Amino acid sequence: MSWVFVMWALMAISKLIQTGGLIGGMAAALSILLPIGSGPLETTSLTIWAVLVTLVAIATLYSNRYGLIEKVAVFLTMTFVVVTIVIALGLPMTEFAYTGGELASGLSFSLPAGALGIAIAMFGLTGVGSEEITAYTYWCLEKGYGRWSGPDDGSDDRRRRVRGWIAVMQKDAVAAWLIYTVSTMSFYVMGAAVLHPQGLVPQGNDMILVLSQTYSGVLGDWGRALFLVGAVAALGSTIWAAIPSWSRSWANALSILGVYDWSDARRRNGWMRFFIVALPLMWLLTFLWISSPFVMILIGGIAGGIFLAAVAVAAWYLRYTEVDPELRGGRFSTVALGVSGVAILLLGVYSALSAAGLVEIG
Image (cartoon, rainbow, N blue to C red; front, side):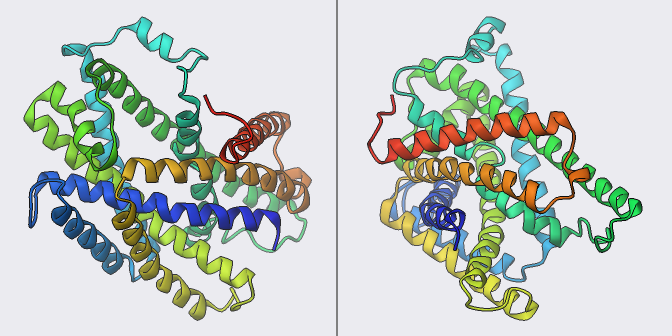
């Protein structure tokens, strides 16, 4: 086991808590939309919906088919992205209008006192985090990237084919960056323009209810319903992608520990299906135990931010030990990877020291 594996294991354990928060958040949204057994956000309704969300996720994902995972994830993701962007762009026509100057101040290099801890958690959660980067390697293989590159025979034709697949992955990265940056900025704008002036702070199981004020304050009651549908799509897409992603990571971890041979497709798929069942059940139990989605999600975010440091180091190591020098990219790629790697490493170290109480986040 390498130190990167140990760091992954620590992150994976913390993510058991974070993803339980996602299940709780989705249960809260559904409980507000359609209470079952009790009033909205009461224990009975939340528990029933959390159990239903977990069982439906297990039943629909148990087949472990990549095509199904991809299509549903794309649909759910684009649903909440489009809804969020539309609302954010419509804010200037409401009582919660924002100005260009306010947007500029929000992009300045400053943070309010006491906000650094939240910022670190958001860095670990936003867009393509460490667990998504790790899972991306499995999805590339299952999608078929590089399948026809051929063995490394040192030929120019093989390098040309590999460069073609690298270009596909670069387009993936740019598309992901655009989608998560625009959608995340939209969420921040909505929170700053609507939640902050009203003094609304998301806490505990009321998180979804408080966040729904962002929409109801702009569009009225139907806007609140629209937000809840968007919340279900947002949380659902994350849960939908997280279950098969983590099932692959955990199954891969067992193979690294020598439990079975990863190249044995039948046993590999069997372990993946085992974790498709086991992980959501553990996530459900963590939510029922802690019952605070907001705190649960922050815990996983901080751990994800720390693990990004391991991802940065691993990227550099693999680049210089496993990749043909002619396929490593030009000077810009080297500089960009270096700058981002150092920044991520510094943040990871700071997050670790803060978690240990050696420095104060403030």
